[in-house]
Image (cartoon, rainbow, N blue to C red; front, side):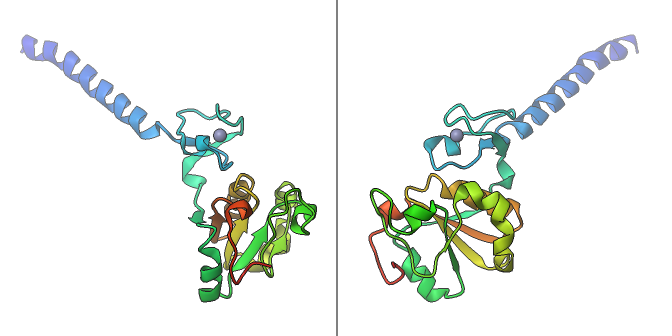
Length: 174
Ligand SMILES: [Zn+2]
């Protein structure tokens, strides 16, 4: 009997240890940087804080839920999904073709610069359940805009990878 009692301690310790390491595994890589279109977007962090790559705040990885569409699939997509909304998150000047260089823009696009999106998101409230394709020049600003939209309850948001600088044209080009 005494030997049995003696054995209980290591067994308990072993159980505690395995539980805590299982919990650790579960929480590892829980955070990612606020999407910024750079390589660091795919890096996973264990603790909240700032991204070592771009300096952006880290967010819970599970809250990043937008999809991606290639720049040269957008026009076909718009033809097949005429209800989809195009959101250009560059500055007004870039949107109006005064950017240097001028990458052009898309037909029927709405322009809200990413810096103003949080404040102006109510302007888009009628499109909350519609598909929204977000783009900028190089897909550095648009992932952040796509994140802001999904955080504000927009259910179907796509980020155009590469941005207008990689867009070669098509029926939806303005
Ligand atoms: Zn980063």
